[in-house]
Image 1 (cartoon, rainbow, N blue to C red):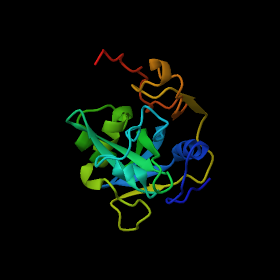
Image 2 (tube, rainbow, N blue to C red):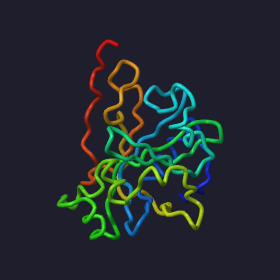
Image 3 (cartoon, rainbow, N blue to C red):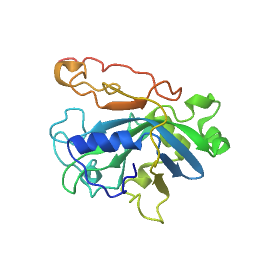
Image 4 (cartoon, rainbow, N blue to C red):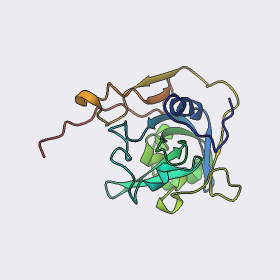
Length: 204
């Protein structure tokens, strides 16, 4: 079940990588998080993707090469991290949405304040905060031994059943996200974030 950090993926392979990330461990700045929830994002064929309208300065890392960390800043306060897995020139990435802190809990707690145990990395912004991942880490090559962020791919079966459904807060065809059931999570894990549908957009 091991996936090389430089794996190229597109289409069905993107979703295979997303599922294989579940149970894998991301480590940075003294904290390790076992992933329990992720979301897949493609490029031009995915209205929810940052790359839907093409390449920009912000999303350039999403176009590869594979094995990079794509970090973006949102709402003026939150960082979110993605594993880039598309072939070079093809945008594809998996959002690291939630996980369980398995090492460095005291450090994670110092960054997250008085959060409950299950909330230390429950949600993409909390996960980045626990790991201290910021825009300074955008573009890191995760396979590089000198990288400050690393992934230890799971080599055993996923601990628990994998479920799939609409991505959190992302609309798709029809506006409800149902056409893009590209969120994957370990069923019953308390660190999986709560689902919320996309808010309807008003006229422009």
